[in-house]
Each structure stands twice: as C-alpha cells, then as structure tokens.
Image (cartoon, rainbow, N blue to C red; front, side):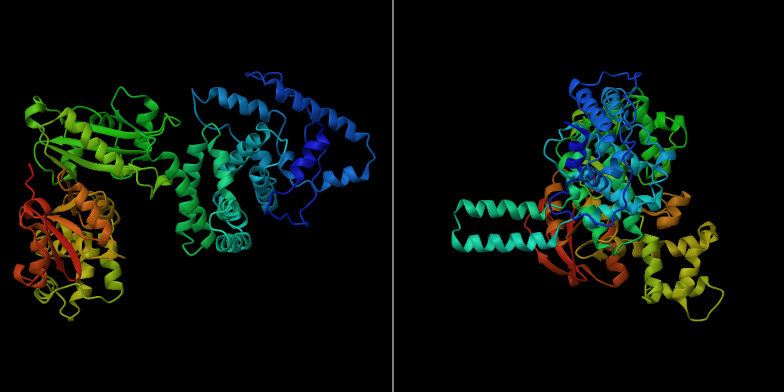
Length: 602
C-alpha cells in the first residue's frame, strides 16, 4: 500500500458528511518525515512496520512524481491536516499505552506547544473528527485507533473555550442528518403499506435505524475502545455538562449530552462490582475518593483514616476496565440510634464499637458521591440497595437504614419565591416577624428575608427560637409539595424518593457548617430505606409523584397540617387499606399525594 493510496483513502468523505470545498490546503511534506524511534519500549507489530515502510517508500516516490492529478489528490485530502499533526512515533506511543495500561491507566500528553498552532482552527477540529468517524475500506484497525487517540489528547490540551468549540462542532456537524431520516422514514412507511412482512421492509427498517443514529456515536464507540477511553468520555461529559449549564437552550449540545449519557448508561449499568474501601485499599483509590467527595470534604489524612476505619464503611461501584476509578461511592456510619447531626458523625474521634453485634442498630448513609460525568445515570440506586444487602449479611441485627441528607435547594427556593413576590408567611408568623423587627413598615415578608440574609441571626438565641418553626414548616412544604413536573423539586429528595426511600424526619441544625447554613439554614433530613416498602415507594413515586412519609412522631405531616390549618379529617383520602401498617394510606394534600407509613426506627 503506497502513501498515495493511503491518503487517497483517508480523503474520501464519510457517507452523509459533506466536506467544504473551501477547506485550507495544508502541506503534506512532513506527513512521515522520519523513521520510527529506535528507543521504542514495545516492539511494533509486523503489520504496522510494513505499513509505515510502505508510507515512507511512497513518500520518496512522490517527490519524483510530476503527476498533477496526484498532487491534486494530495492537496484535497480531507485528512491531511489531521495526519500532519501526527508524528511517526505516535504508533509507538499507542502500543506503549496499551502495554502500560494495566499498570498505570491513562493517556500520554498531547504536545501542547505544537498543537497551539491549530487549537483555534475549527477546520482542523472538523478534519480530525471526520478522520475519527469516517470508515474507509482497507485502512485496517490501527490507523483509526491512532487518530482517535490523537483526538483525545488534542481535546485534553484545549482550554475551556477550545473544548466548547470542539463539542459544539461534534454536536452540530456530526449529529442526526434530518434529511436522511425523513427519506428513510418515507421509504419505511411505503414498504410497510406494500408488504408488512417482506424482507424489503426489514432492509428499510435497518436504513431508518442507521439514519437515526447520530454520527458522534461513532466517535464515542471508537474512543471507548482505547486504553482509558471510558474515563476520557466520563471527563468529556463533565466538561459538556459545565458548558451546557451556561447554554441551557443549545439544542445541539443537549442532543450530544443525551447521546453520551445513553452510551455511558449502556456501558456501565449492570457491569459494576461492589467494593468496600479500607485503609488497606490501594492508595490511588483512597486518593480518588478524597478528590471526588462532593458532600463532606475530607479534612486531612486522619479524617480519611477515620471514615474508612472501624464503625464506618465506604463502598464503591467499580468497573473492571477502570480499576482505579470509584464511579460512585457511599459513606456509612454504623451507630446505635438514628443520627440527627452530621458533625457528630464526622467529628467522632472513636467511631468503633466494642461489641458491634449488640450496639450497631442503624446504618446511616451520610454521603453519596457520583462522578460529575455520570450525573443522571442511575448508579446510586444500585449502590444503596447492594450496600444494604452487604450490611445485612455483616450485621443481621440492623433494621434501620437511613440517610442523613442535605437539602441543597432550600435557601435558593426561598430566595426565588421572595424574588417573585410569593407570600411565604402565615398570619401568625407575620406577627412573630413584626415582634422580632425593630422597624414596623408592614413589610413582614421583606423583613423575614432580611433576617435570613444576616449571619448574626442564627447566633441570636431568641431569633433562632422564633424562626425555627417557620423554617421547619417551609422546609416541609419544600420537600413534600414543591414539584418539578410531578417529581420533587429538591434534587437530593428526588434521588432518594425515586430509589424507594420515604421522608422521615427534619433535623434542625443537622449541619451547622458554613455550607449547611448557606444551603438550608442548617436543616438536614433523614430519608428512610425500609426494606418492606422500597419497591412500593419507588413504583408510586415514579407513577404519579406520590411521596411516602414516615410518621412515627407526627413529623412532616403535622408540620404541614398545623401550618395550613388542616385537620386529619379534612384531608382528601384517596386510598384506604385495611392493613395500613403494611401498604400505607394515600392522602391528597393541596393536590399532592402522600403515602403515610408508620415505621419504627432504632
């Protein structure tokens, strides 16, 4: 295979991808200018050596050729700009990466100094993507993988603006071709009318399925087969979500995100192993959980050692292709009673138990972290259920599994409501605010908001005593009644409720840290995972948004009833049961269905 043939094959555009005739002509004199490095640590397969020798031979012959058509072919090669950036030792590096993957997964660094000349060139990015996505007869398996590898290194080398350009190009120019879809759909409809059981209809169905598949899926598939490719795609989606959060109306980026999310879900869900992390676990794993922890940051090494030591557990879901990457992990406190304060868990100097078989009565999930690039992929629910089963094997006496969860959207919701002029206070609460305020201008809602903004408010015992019932009622309303479509507005509430948990108890000053005060005025919540009710809770919540509430002490329901002046008899009862202790009773409160359970905890 000569160099001319290789480049002419690379120059052929992919089916359905149009190349602009105005692309700049790039010199090919330095495509392969030097032989492979002799310092290569891994021997190059014979087929690769032969291909490289053919390319070099073709290079020498091309210098003596006066064939104008050949020169034209070289000048118009779509992949020329891509191959110009590839050095002859890139194949060596690729095989080195394969050899080193089992010891140190990851990519070698792209040459940022030399890539700076093309980082701002969108045409170079487009050619690179065309070269990765395009299938050409006779090119083999090595060259596509090498170019895909180079595209990954190139993306890593980009700054935020460069990554944004790259992702927009991938989303816009390599998505679904609507004209092809419409044509394939018409063909399918015509064949279905003529003969619904013919082979022609099956072929039309295949054509339609192929047309609906976006071009960027080929990029994801090719990258996923590289050493460390899955981790690259996770990190790429992290970057994509960051950019998408600043451009929420971008249709193409949203479509790209959905495609990558579906791919990651297919690759990971059902292919994960549960692993307990201890102080004896590999240092790289312990380092990663300190790096990724998103709920309660680790203070130091001693804090890490305490959280993975006696009386505590850390479980992670791992994938065999990413042995050093905890994809999602949960931290558990083994205690004797239901916890209501996270500082008590985090600062306990001796969390171990002298006789755990007798004193461990509760498993408290106080932190769950998923890698940002896997957001929206339901890994946490698999993790929690598998952890519950694992803990039941180790501690059969545990009957109470609960979270101690933050309420990250509570303060933001109050601020938004006040900004929209919504009335939050009840008449009796307005009088309380008037008594606390030294200014009587009649704007109790405004004064309430001013109190909440002042950090000194929560160090004043009298103000805290009077504000506590108001904030607790509003928090109960936020958790139970505020919805996004038919599901809970709060993201943490939605996560646990859709996993089958029930809202159990609000905890005043459950997190007195600066983060806890900033997010929810220190309030935290216990979501209870009752093994007898998980499946029913999950089904009813996903079906119509019914939220299960545990009422051992009156809890949420009493707060909402008292705040709205509703008695138990005035609630609309939609479902009755002769055995309410098992199935619960569904009631309707302000148009929201609540499933009332009576669950005893340790």
